[in-house]
Image (cartoon, rainbow, N blue to C red; front, side, top):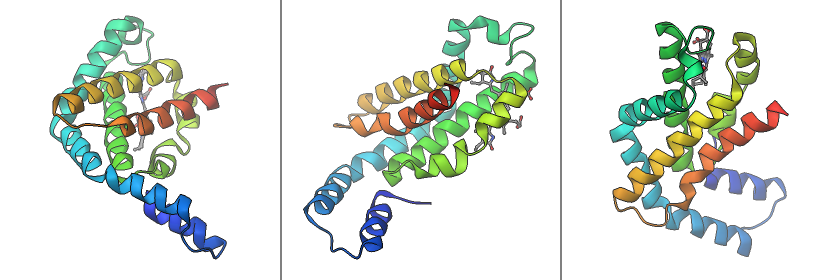
Length: 169
Ligand SMILES: CCC1=C(C)/C(=C/C2=NC(=C\c3[nH]c(/C=C4\NC(=O)[C@H](C)[C@H]4CC)c(C)c3CCC(=O)O)/C(CCC(=O)O)=C2C)NC1=O
């Protein structure tokens, strides 16, 4: 596990430097958004089941072939596995938001995932779409909760989709 503060200190320690102007600016930016990050995580926590349900139903509306015979999310078991994966992405995104660092996603979610998905025929494009839909729903809900300046919300979701998309090239 790593967060914005420990990550920064580690980088400075490696080269034996005191925290300079850049470091202080980065720390200030992190602490200034701290309360909003925690509040956003609380919104996600309170609505997680509904966010996943709504994102799943929008995804399957857009791409109904996923849940038809031959689709990767066809059968109750695979449908449930797909929603469970969405729930993993959401939960770990909420950790990354609070940490202000995406390392937890690399370490706990993305490592080895592509191999697993490839071997099970889980399609990457629709997975990326599902994560984007969750991001949009989370942003709406966080905004509706009156949390301002929450531009940091994009970061973990975009990190996940970027990683999937890059690996897919
Ligand atoms: C916490 C980190 C973590 C992740 C991320 C994770 C993902 C993960 N998703 C899996 C399966 C799966 N993932 C999906 C997901 C989908 N299929 C679709 O068509 C959609 C596009 C998509 C949902 C958006 C499906 C359907 C399976 C079951 C595939 C199968 O068994 O044939 C599997 C194989 C083992 C299992 O079924 O449990 C893993 C390991 N496991 C973890 O521990």
